[in-house]
Amino acid sequence: MADPVHALARAFQAAITTAFGAEHAAVDPSLRRSTHADYQANAAMALGKRLGRPPREVAAAIVAALELDGICRKVEIAGPGFVNLTLEDAYLTRELAETAGGGRLGIAPAAEPETVIVDYSGPNAAKEMHVGHLRSTIIGDALARVLEALGHRVIRQNHLGDWGTPFGMLIEHMLDLGEAAASQELSVGDLNAFYRQARAKFDGDAAFAERSRRRVVRLQGGDEQTLALWRQLVRESTRYFDSVYRRLGVTLTDADFAGESFYNPMLPDVVEELGRKGLARESEGALCVFPAGFTGKGGEPLPLIVRKQDGGYGYATTDLAAIRHRLTTVGARRIVYVVGAPQSQHFAMVFATAREAGWLTPPARAEHVAFGSVLGADKKMFKTRSGDTVKLSDLIDEATERAAKVVREKNPDLDAEAADAVARSVGVGAVKYADLSSDRIKDYVFDWDRMLAFEGNTAPYLMYAHARIRSIFRKAGVESPREAGIVLSEPAERALALELLRFGAVLEDVAATLEPHRLCGYLFELAGSFTSFYERCPVLRAESDDVRRSRLALCDLTAEVLAKGLGLLGIEAPERM
Ligand code: ARG
Image (cartoon, rainbow, N blue to C red; front, side, top):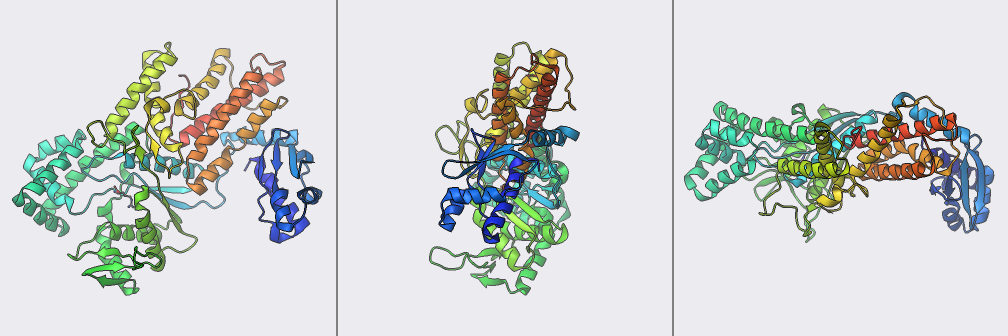
């Protein structure tokens, strides 16, 4: 890990242990960037309070025990007890060379690579994906990419809603339309219309409803003709979802679909096992588990229904089968469910049940990566003007069109073909970045103008920052001096270097917290540090050849980190814009 903060933190922990004993080793050294030095540590404040001693005295004791030879050239106590730290130039240069070398950019492969399942997207067959599925798709894809970059074995799982009672009416509706017409309707992606028509007939036509119910029974009974129709229905939907993923530049493929139907054959056995382990019992005709710690308003235990009154299985049973399969058959160490916040209780209960059943045991862990809603300008759920769910393909169309306009304004000289490609990248990038850059658990307002702006924490700003650096090389006709030694003399150069060294640690932080906005915030700060550097330090007209090469190397490294970081968010970084 190249981030100097980590080396400093380790040294502080050791010094605190030496000076005050191991029981204080966990005190946060509280390191941050400083205007008076490279970093400042505020550990003595918290520790002084704990020990009831003046912080300045505590700071002096820590500094006396600090071993920072080769790392820091200056360590000073300031004010009430801050410790100001200035890094050794040679140390900084060496770390930078290591970061730049081999193109790893400071990304260290995980010491213990894990098998991680990322469950994301999860749309429902024969239904339009809604904005919640869009969030899951975007966040899940970024997390999968980051985990993979750190060397974990990532298994993407698309828990498609492709089973259950609605399929009776959907199949009957398909038969009514005629397979050719139905397949036409499904493949153009008018899934909502198809679903609504089926639903309307089901609600208004008793004979159709009866046919649908009989169809469900045949589907569940494994009737071959019914299964063939069901397969066709699912195939048309997955084809449509795949096309959306391609347009969005999402890494999910056909091979990642493991829908609810996949777990169907496992359900009776899962229920049997829960019964055998004494976890399931009858309640009002249904079979339920009551994981410890979940109670309703009146203090009564909350049920997770594993078998309904009519003998059918539902969403919860399927998730129990999925988690058992993932842990005991696939051997996952970590399972990450990227699903909206309204399902928090569902997942908490599924995880608790899996623990009680002995499937989910440390070091394996399951995490619900919850997220908030996307709101319209009116602060209500994001909908089309007519109040419909926003269709993802329409959203991508609009993003591209709007992006084409801003790209043309920004750079009228781009040829048509390049401008088209850039508009696509900017449009999709803007939508993704707007989603990823906000703290995922919060709701956010979908705002075209803000996400497409070239100022602020946006995709266009970062993409443009990257393209601008690339143009420095293009205009000067110079190659990137990859192996050039970096020499730091100006404070703005130093600040940029310190920022560059953080990249690997930021990715580790994203992998630990599953919060992509931390990477966005980092890239935004990096672009800011670069701008300050570029304003203050001449690159092509630097005072000497060595300085020029060194600054070009800093430019190149910045561009690479920006492109790599955007790439891990699923956003393209064109060479020119
Ligand atoms: N199809 C579900 C929905 O639309 C999402 C599936 C999430 N994944 C899971 N394992 N339950 O709400």
